[in-house]
Amino acid sequence: SQQGEEDPQALSIQEGENATMNCSYKTSINNLQWYRQNSGRGLVHLILIRSNEREKHSGRLRVTLDTSKKSSSLLITASRAADTASYFCLKAAGNKLTFGGGTRVLVKP
Amino acid sequence: DVKVTQSSRYLVKRTGEKVFLECVQDMDHENMFWYRQDPGLGLRLIYFSYDVKMKEKGDIPEGYSVSREKKERFSLILESASTNQTSMYLCASSTGQGKRGSEKLFFGSGTQLSVL
Image 1 (spheres, one colour):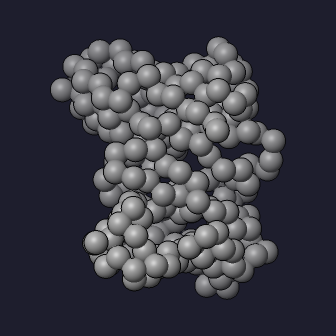
Image 2 (cartoon, rainbow over the protein chains, first blue to last red):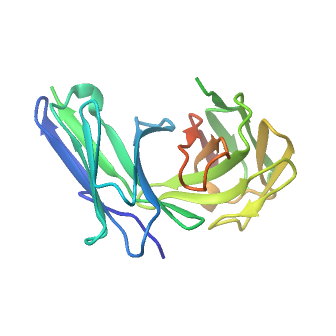
């Protein structure tokens, strides 16, 4: 199935450090989105990258897409305690949308 | 801002009960979705709807049904709740004006359902 596998499953960093997480997939996609979920809440959209794009930025977020490796990465620079959350990728392939399993990020003050 | 409201934050039901989870969005979105989220399994799509009275099965529709009588409201129904339906349920919506998958999803805060 078109599963967005994410790694690592969990990440613990100090405030101010960068956090990187990856999302891989098996077949071609139209685009890929990243979402954040604070503990026990709904997901919030962060950024969308299309299959013909290689990199996008939004504030302290940087997303890359490598279609040859079938993977995307989300980088959070200069992390803050408020970035503590789970991060999910959502892949769109044709009419099929599939969420990855998520990466839990803990930013320690 | 788009607001997606789920009627209950926490819900406790007994096995065999009929359970209704309600979701309302206030931005005239065409598309609405129901997901369930379980540890280690991520979010899985139960049902979605692209228009009033229209519904399509997602990846795990068994044991669930849905109703969309009005554009702003999408209800998830557990006909006879079972313990394996204990989960976090998330409703989402999107405009429906772009190609599927090219729009961002707006999520409600979720309903944590416990079936005892």
